[in-house]
Structures are given as structure tokens and as C-alpha cells.
Length: 451
Length: 172
Ligand code: FES
Ligand SMILES: [Fe+2]
Image (cartoon, rainbow over all chains, first blue to last red; front, side, top):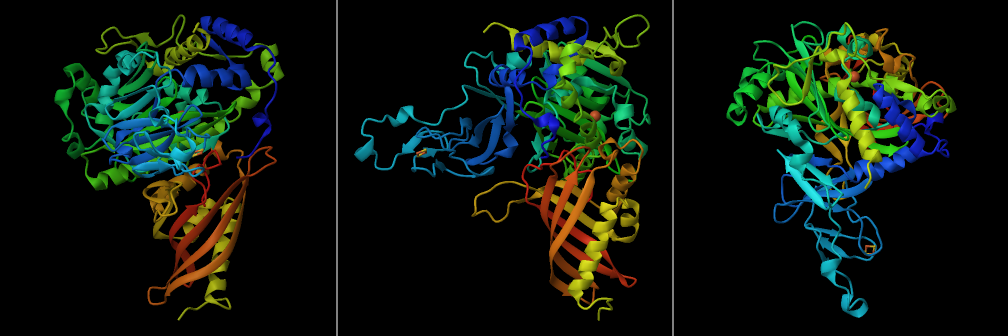
């Protein structure tokens, strides 16, 4: 990736405490501090506080269906092996040989019973257990192999196939972490059994990981301007194109995560899936309220703190082709201050016909991917932010970003008390920033709380 | 037999690739779409993952950075011409270096030839001083239509697993 001027390392200016304090002040005004989008100290603390503490997404069980299947994954910037061991259990093992630190897993994916370190040949079972030390008796008679297995993430748990890990031994359990957002996740992962198609798209972007996370918390305000070119050529969702009458709900205060859901009144829309796919769903797994919301759902998106987002698009990549329901799961990985790597997985109901899955995949690629007709314009816009955030002037004018939309006299977003699900829910959800504020509040709490 | 305005089949194919590179570098995308591809074109850029040497291939059969037909390419080309296509406005400056062209197979009855070539895209945006580089092998099938070549099938085999450019808002 091109090293432009925004990518240069530099010493920090104001100490991080002052930045976090000014961020706290800004949040009280419904604003955020621009500087946090490109700052060495903030980035370092994020690795520690945000990524090595919270429950971070690792992968989907359908990516490692067989015993011995593995994938390389990252928690923050730390390398882990996501593997289904010989007992069928999912393991999240730190990819570093206990002898001298070499990587024991050298391919991005594969199937193996053992990881053998190429340096001196220490060998680990796919459970992480150390079972081979060359010339052990001659050299390490006292070495206790039971103590020298690969380190594992202290907490690993899954929700409907989505595997998360927390590097904090004292983390609350995953269910607590997801909290009320589970009510919404169920719409996507409980109603249908979802699976990942193939391998993720991975690419580097010169912007901070928080910018897309913030966007996927619920920036629906950018769509008419940011994505005008895609809408003009007639692709994407019928709701965004205004072809269907719909209401957009913005949902926050569900455990620090957030969702945006289009509802198409009295329609069996199910994110654009056709009847033969809807037939494979399991309505009995949802409450009546959840089922009603799922049924009327058009485009839906959201983010699980810190960096796991999704968009469920009922749409097409070509105005001459039918609408399908395409689910893109994405993770915004921190690389360095002002730089990230996007990971994008396209998901589909497992029991849908193969031909349909292929179409879903094509629409995912054509809309939200490295080459996605929607995605490329987001990125074309975002990559200018780090340069401004890194400005001396940003600090001097205490530059903030504005999240006060929807507040004050005459604004159209309003809390919908009749909404059946948990959280604080706004109608005209495209005209409020409460979701994004939720993200930055949680971020700020996590960065500043006493530990 | 082939009726070529060139000394060899390979040279004729090279001429096609060079002309194509020029249109794409110059952002004459509509012209590219109208004159250089067949209406049953298949175009794909598979996802690559690092695998052990013993693996048959590093390229996915189900995952792609682009998987296109005539219609979806038309959508892309038209969108890129739109005044609100921020990823390419101001446009990235792309220079395609096409080399190592070889004829892999020919089928004169069908009027088709399979070729392989190397592609290096040197990509600069705004004030970049260091380019994004995209390196790949292309496997193409060209078809003779009304006395000239058209692209009927293309697979772009990237050397990248993590792609080092922020968006693929160009044609490879
Ligand atoms: S570092 Fe792995 S065996 Fe020595
Ligand atoms: Fe967007």
C-alpha cells in the first residue's frame, strides 16, 4: 500500500490523557474528537484496552467444518490459530512456539493433526498440547510438556456459529457481553442457519478502524450522497432506492452495540429472500415479535463492539437481475494508526439452493467488497480523514466530529415506544446519531475506566 | 485459418492486450465494454490464500474479488462514469504493464485462442509518491468476432492475499 503522508509515524503531541479528557467533554456535547482517528498513543492503548479485553470476533464455525481444519486469525494485531481440534472442539490458540516464539502455523488455512514448528521441531497437537520435543531426554529432561502447550485465548465462546474470544481472563461471559443485542442477532442467525461462503476478502485501507465501525453503527445519513453513483445506476436495495415504502429504525442501548433496520410494513420481505429460501427458515425459534420484525425487514446493518459489523442487503448488483438477500459480515482490523485491514465474509442461509447461494455471492461482491459498487465509494471518502486527524491544527482548534443529528426542536427522529424489541429505538432512524454516539461512549469508557 | 494483421498469432493477441490496456489506462471504459468483450463474457478475480506447497492451488473456487458477466460489468462501467463515483473522482492514475504473453491453446474452428500474460498495475492516487502495485497473471480466452478479437473469458490470478489497494474500482 502506498505510504502517503498520513501513514508516517510521529511522536505524540498532547498526552493521551488530555485527548481522552477532551473526548469525554466532546461526547457530552454530542461530538467526538477528530484526533483519535490517527494517534499513536491512542492506537497502542486500543490494542490493549479494546482488542485485548473485549470479546472479539474470530471466525465462523462453518469455516472450519472438519476436525483439523484451521484458519489464521487476528485478535487486534495478535496472531491466533482458529482450529477445530481432533475432538471436534473449536480452539483459539496463540500462534507462537513456546520454545523460541516462531510461528507454528504457516498457512492461512488448511487441515492438520499437528502443528510442527519449523525452527527446532517442537510439535503440538491441534488441541495445542505439546507432544514432541526433539531429543528431549538428551536436552530437556526436566521440561514439563504439559506446561508448554500453545497458549490459548483465555475465553472462547460462540453464538450460533460465530466464535468470539476475549484475552481478558476476567471478561464477563459472551452472553452477558452481547446482552440485549441477542434479540436482534437472532433475526439473522437464529431464524436461519447461516454459513460462510469460501474465504474472506482482505484488503488494506488508509483509514482508522473506527471510521467504518462508526459508519456501521448506523450512519444512514451518508447514503444519498456517498452512494449516489450506485443508486443512480439502479443497484442496491429497493428501500434505499425508494421503490418501497419503508421506515428506518435506529436501535441503540443494547449492550454497547447497535443496529439499523428498515421495516417494510405488512410485507413478507425477509431481506429480499425468495419464498423457496424463506421456506427453509425456522420461525419457531423466534418470538412472534422477533418474527414480525424479521418478516418486514429490508436492509439491516449493525455493529457488535468493537469491530464486527454486518450489512444484510435485499438487493441486486444489476438492475436487470432479481433481488436476493446478501449478508456481508465484516471485521475492521487495526494495522497501525490511520490504517486498517478490512475482512469481508459473505454469508447465506445454509439450506438455500446452491444456485441461489452463487447469486448471493455475486451480489455481495458487486455491492460490498473490495470491488463493491457501494463499498468503493465509502473508502474513497474515508481515506482523507486520517490526514486531517493527524494535523497540528486539529489539536489547536480542538477539532470535533458532529453527532448531534436528531437533537433539538423540530427534528424528525423520535423514540418509538411501541417497538417490540429491546433498546432505545428511533423512528426516522437515518436522522439521528444516537447509534454512533453509543459506539464512541463505549469506546471512551473502555479506554478510560480503571482497571 | 486466422486472418490476422500481424506476423503471428501471439503478436495479434499482444496487440489486443495493448489496445485494451490503453483503453483502460485512459479510462475509456464504455468503449472497452462496447468493443472489446463478448456478450457472454465471463470475468473473475479469485481470492487467494496462503497455503502449504502441497496444496493444489491457492485460489478459491468459490470466493472472488470480482465475478462478472456482461451485465454486471456494464453496471460497473456506467457507475464509474457517474459524477458521484467518489472512489474514482478524482480518478486514480493507473498504468498497466502487460508482458510475457504466450499462446496456451488455440481452437481455430471456434475462432478462440487461450492466452496467458503477466500484468502489473502501477496505481497512484492524489499526491501518492509510492504506488499501489497489483501483480497478476491473466488467463484469457479471446474470440474472433467480425475479424477482430474480443475477450470471452478472463481469470485474473493475483499475487496478493491481502490486496494492497483500497478499492478495486478499476478493471484488471
Ligand atoms: S522455536 Fe519452535 S521449536 Fe524452537
Ligand atoms: Fe456506506
